[in-house]
Length: 340
Ligand code: NQM
Image (cartoon, rainbow, N blue to C red; front, side):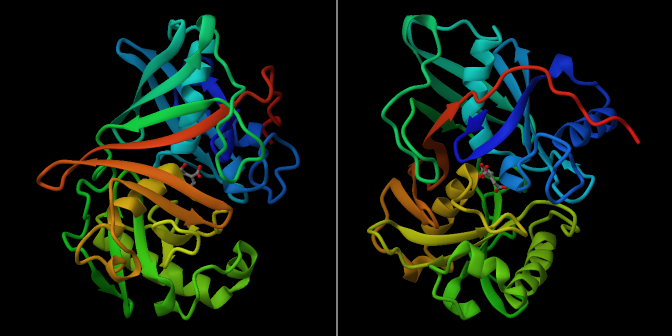
């Protein structure tokens, strides 16, 4: 299925091995990793198209475990969430009979097994059938489709234990001022100008800049430790988001490394974390953004991502909302590469 701006293989948990090592070995052989082209599997040769969703029935809805299958190494990581693949979980759960559809809209409560959070997906189900066609456009996906509305209920500190994992709104790391934030995705915010960038460079330009990538990795490694994530060289979090003033009337312009490739748009929880980070009064982005309301438009290389934050009187984030679309692309039998 395409889920938001990502694409992945969705499985019922009961159809995969229980043992995580066996499961991961099977998924590597299904996706065709390790191989930069994933030529012998169904992966799309980019982290955004080498993803897996494992869905199971629960008393209070469904459970969703996200697995990032590395492209050019033999590793599968459960250390992060993916709000984009999440968009397909509600429709998949209804299609597979895990959730009874309503006539109109079906609310699917989803336990985020990677981080322990909760989300609710609202799926269009006129006449009790999932509707994929619709008028909703999300930047980074051609055409329009039916909206899947996602509400995240307790994302602050999902992986690091606190919205501000270092305890500070800004930290000096490897000579750069950064804001470390976790509103569903551990993210390090940096200012483009501090890196000698304008901030609206193309994905290709940024990926070709080896000095920049090496610098980002040094900052990431030190910030990861400060955020309580330990040694992050082999993990996909924290993400690195470079900020500059908005170009198209939004809140801020972003370029995000996830963490080694530059995202063609931005992750859902990545955008939720940026939204939470740019509103901090002493954060590094405060002078880059104007007046901030509950709705923020996070600009990215292929458009903008709207995030809605519901904040308590004491400043705590109660709910994070986002609109996505999803679509099944094929349904059937996959033939894993045999074990060597
Ligand atoms: O942040 C990419 C994506 C993601 C993750 C990544 C995501 C999220 O765009 O919720 O969706 O940051 O690795 O799918």
